[in-house]
Amino acid sequence: MRLQQLPSVARFAERVREDLLQGRSVLILIPPGIAADELWSQIEEDLRRRGCRARWLDPEDLPGSGPDLHRLWSWIKSPGELTPPQDWSALLRRPEWPEALRIRGLERCGPEEQIRWAQVLSKWAEARKAMSTPPPGPRSLWAIMPATLPPEHVPSNDVFLQVHRWWGFPSNLELRWLCREQGPFDPTEALWAEHISAGLAGSDPSLALQLREVVFDSFETICRRLNEIAEQRGWTAEECAEWRERIGSGARPAHPETMPSSLYPIWARGALMWTPEYGLELHPAALARAGDLPGLQRRLVRAQAGLIWPILVEIHQTLQKQLGIQENAPDQPEWKDLAARAAGTPFEAEVNQVRHIRNTLAHLRPLSWPQFRFLWSLYQRLAGP
Image (cartoon, rainbow, N blue to C red; front, side):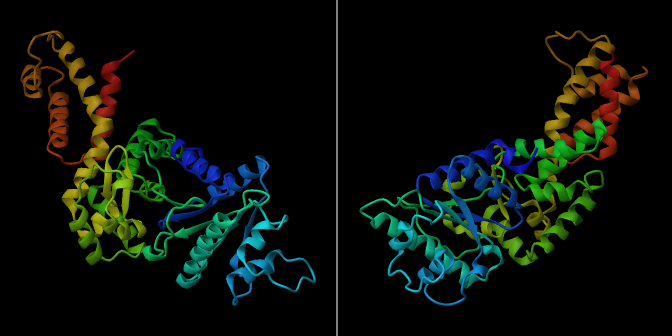
């Protein structure tokens, strides 16, 4: 499964396509670390399939100086055409102008050039709104820019301009789908890798891939890897500690649309994520860089609990039967009761080990890969044919 096939990403792409087909220009702000080039190309291809003349333009193909109107005109003008247009509406009316033009490669441009193109989108939308006679087609501009574009230069939504902020995967479940497709062949290893890498990564697909190589290692090794990732992304320990103070290490039950504007700079750096399962929360690599090991332990336990707790319930029920305890007894035995009942039986060692695993998880301490491997093997053996 590819990025653009996930339901939430497909919905995001559909909103962009509909805006463009309705003649609205689009600015997409995207934090670092999101590899979505295939998605943008897919949007262009979908527009063409719907009969829209979609093209792209790289700013490197334009003159480096001069009014923005004249720069764009130099790209579309006919050979021998010498007189530039006097206003934006003249370009909008040209019959050969693309119905959806993507300004590509702005992530390679400097801040001044990015600001310049944000202004172009605003002027283009204003010109479209001011036209008394509609142009011959949608005439939309669209661009993808780093989320670090200064807020004062981000245009406001208007009739012919929409700003979309990319939040990666709105669902942690979708990230698990990707991890399942790319996980190990061994089913036991695949289960563990899927839950740990996706559970820690939240809504960051690149982080899930980077964690796959350490999910079978110790908690300390996972922390070191997360710290390395934070360094690679340019997050200092000081700013991560500041973000940690502002956001906290736990989840906030909020929606991106209601997020305080004061938190946008953290999102723009790629350190703030959101999922419907967990709300707004700080990136785990930022927690590691800030030295918040208890916060990371809770994230790891959360990732493990969804996998392990149902297995513990099934093992508990099966052991009751093996030890002759009625399943419908009014008072269901605790693990300590099962351990007392199993003393001196062939199940004693296994019950004590499972009880230890259960207590470890219940006290918010993460389990190790060998502990899960034992638990899964016991579960399969007790379930039997």
